Length: 302
Ligand code: AMP
Ligand code: MG
Image (cartoon, rainbow, N blue to C red; front, side, top):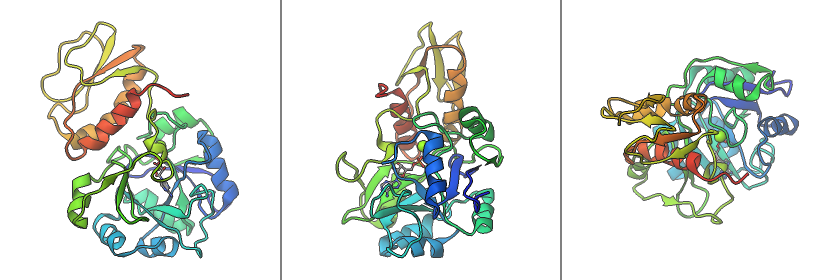
């Protein structure tokens, strides 16, 4: 299907992806259309290994260090795109950079091997909706849009990749994600600057309203109002008669990450118009979890 220019949804360890042959502009266009994604928001190109990544992007020393440490895995590197790369301009939305990742999920890796091409894939949900962590989530959001949905069960990480821009003079954290900031900074021996709006072309992951359920989110809640569902964290949630999902009764951030998006979807279908969210620590994976919650809580721009 990929070779014919079709669109295939597939599991990765982060979230499910909506994939097309990254060298086929018509196929990539179908991905943008299926998601309703603005054309200026570039896609991640998934590749089978570092050698393949090197043929599309300029992996200088720092990039190579990070690739060696975290690939395959939930790290996306934004690099200067090689003029010889066959990845079409639509993937990088006309920028002279390319976002590359080697996924760890076995099905994703087999798919990349079998297809023999880089696969451009954003998350397999409608633009600005909650990201999918199961094949059923993809079907709920996109119906029979994708030609095939490969079912790999629950995404093992459940949070998107960390996006680091190494194309400029200072490394930028474009999006916190599955690899904690500190792990990357320790390896680089440098701090990651936070992307300022206007610094670089916008990442959709940076849009204020994103990952959004229909219900309103109230963050850092210590108690639950009668009309609120509860998204809890830790062993001591406040009392409530309404629906509750605990991201991790043990207070484990990794467990919370795997459950976050499914929990938002579940509470969204409870019929409650608001969700109280307990405070979640900001260290490690907590930075990405809090980032997603803040965006899910942001006023809707459109
Ligand atoms: P997703 O749609 O969840 O796969 O997210 C992909 C992320 O990578 C988004 O935040 C994109 O904006 C970002 N991205 C992809 N390509 C580039 C690029 N060339 N420059 C900057 N950010 C990029
Ligand atoms: Mg997305």
